[in-house]
Amino acid sequence: MIAAETKAVAARGYATYGPAAKFGPFDFSRREVGPNDILIDIQYCGICHSDIHQARNEWPDLMPATYPMVPGHEIIGSVSQAGDAVTKFKVGDIAGIGCFVDSCRECAPCTGGIKQYCLQLAAYTYNGTEMDRVTPTYGGYSNKYVIDEGYALKVKADGDLSGVAPLLCAGITTYSPLKRFNVGVGSKVGVVGLGGLGHMAVKLAKAMGADVTIFSTSPGKEEAAKKLGADHFVITRDAKAMEPLRNSFNFIIDTVSADHELMPYIGLLGYGGALVVVGIPPSPAMIHQGGLIMGNRIVAGSLIGGIPETQEMLDFCAEHNVTADVEVITPDRIEEAYDRTVKADVRYRFVIDMSAK
Ligand SMILES: [Zn+2]
Ligand SMILES: [Zn+2]
Image (cartoon, rainbow, N blue to C red; front, side, top):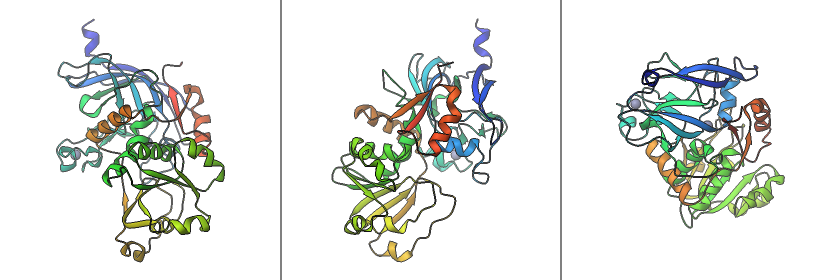
């Protein structure tokens, strides 16, 4: 039996073989559990919109698809094996994996706790390679993951973990810029778009004590917005509602990945206010420099978060009882979930139950 512990780990995932192919079962191997590795038995994996972009090869320049692809970077499960040198985890602990699983460990971002910005390019959780640049990475639509403990997150949660999985991408993507721009009690925060990311931004900003306004193009979302805890709901096209809000926001997070204008939101920022974009629309947006100069305003981007900050976010969410609103599905419904996510027909995140057969 000892020999079995030094072998590659047999894993089963759900893979797609092309941009229009259906997902099907896929048997593959994870590397053997090394001294610093943990083996996670995956319980849930969220479906992020970027899974769909990559599975369907819609980002051919940014992240070209390699097949077979097992997507998934909102992973949560329990530790079933820990290497001899592992200190952070023990068997039975709940652990999470986000968007990257390794990096060069030597560059300034890596040693500075922001490995997602690794100058050598981090090893993404799927549709990438290990740092050997050869071994493909397969994501969380699978039953097991082997990862260096330094790239895994501790989850202090019991009970239902399905709503915790999306924190690993949607949660940290919105938490990191909220923290960077010091959102807190009394901050006036705007959230553009009410999808997987937007709904997390609302919950996190409310937990931080901010006054939150949702900007949406769909009047039908007002009731849902209020249910999430948003203080105000504004239809972006409604000039009469937008005008009195000019120069008043400390922080606006824009989660929309369809083409849209930024200037209407920049005009809402008060002195020194920041608009942070986390969606990547197909076409670039135009920014008028005058709108930034007048009011000392900032437009910034943000990419997930480092391991220390992701841990801080998970601890914050545990303390404030923040989880994602999810619809749990079995792995045979991935295509249906993709189609509904594209149509924004989900409140607010699909999560695959990987223990379901
Ligand atoms: Zn994601
Ligand atoms: Zn690095």
